Amino acid sequence: MLEMTPCADERDEEVSLDVYNAVWPHAAFTMDEVRSFKESVRAHHDVVARLDGAPVGSAFTVIVPHRSDRVLTIVTVLASHRRRGVGTALYAELSGWTREHGLAEIEVPVLDDDAESLAYATRRGFVEERRELGVVLDVTGMERPALEPPDGVEIVSWAERPELARGMYEVSLEAYPDIPGFEDDELESYEDWLAHDMQGSGDRPDATFVAVAGGEVVGYAKFSITAARPRAAAHDLTAVRRAWRGRGVARALKATQIGWAKANGFEQLDTRNEERNAPIRRLNDEFGYRPGIGRIHLQGPLAPR
Image: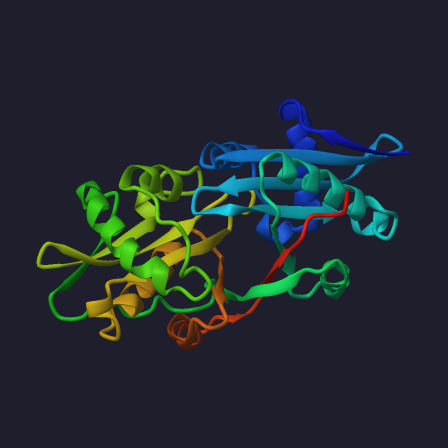
């Protein structure tokens, strides 16, 4: 018997997370990080699919501040239990929750090496909104790259200069609208940005680097770090003011990140870049990043009632 069980407490949430981590181990999280993320969203719904009492799938659905016109969801089904109606039942469950919140559109990521899930979604009317290409850098055998910031630019950690937060926010106001696929996102207030983007469980001031010129923040780059993957760090964002682009600021920030990762025992760096974001993709190529697992973000309708 297949049952949909909305998570009522943390024990249920841990079951949901276990299913997700089993299906997406390359992007695993801990419960601390899930709690932190839930605090940053407007609403969330976490459900476990159980077949004869055993967990076989999960769906985590949220409404985030910067995309409040739709729900974002991740649906995971254990490989051994696909093609048994689990995904369809989860789709119906999260669609009902979406209707209750007055929304009619779903955004869902599919791994770019998962043709089966892509075909499943396409048959139900989902279409590609954007594609993020995954890249990976093995730092264990490489030399620390030379740090060559432009004249007049200093690279410091946010831990060293906490007062630079407001300047970093101002950089983000220029950077986010210029990222392909994010042009129409709602920008949060400084206070909300600080809480949601910079103070989550995976955000560390010592792993966030700021480019400063003449006392002005001209760029920054940050890692997202999870205890679920203790030897890997994910590039979260590299942002540079428009007037300073093309002058080596992003390169200096990236070199600083790679050097910091090597010095702190990390073995792998990874990230995803929107395929139209040519400048950051070129920069990653120059540093030796290799193809990894990417995501195709789909938009689609709710399941029929």
